Length: 105
Image 1: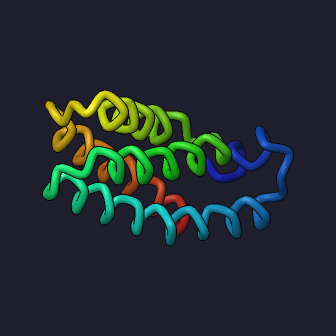
Image 2 (image 1 turned 135 degrees about the horizontal axis):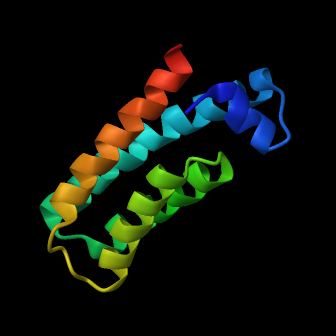
């Protein structure tokens, strides 16, 4: 993942993309924290909402892998099925760390 390529794909200047990415990094961490809390309490609606938020933000920035993982978690929440969601959240966190790494370079 290269910032310049992602920005270009969206028709943005690199600095514009970085500004939007900064917002994702800030809000995304809050969404991930909420996902983890929702899992602890069995809050499938909260899980679905947080995953939906992260899915949309990631998709808007062309971060398809992050968006797809969030989509899977959202689907689990919608189906009220928490099987395997902890593992998906861990994968989401790993992918999110890569995005944060993009922002910090």
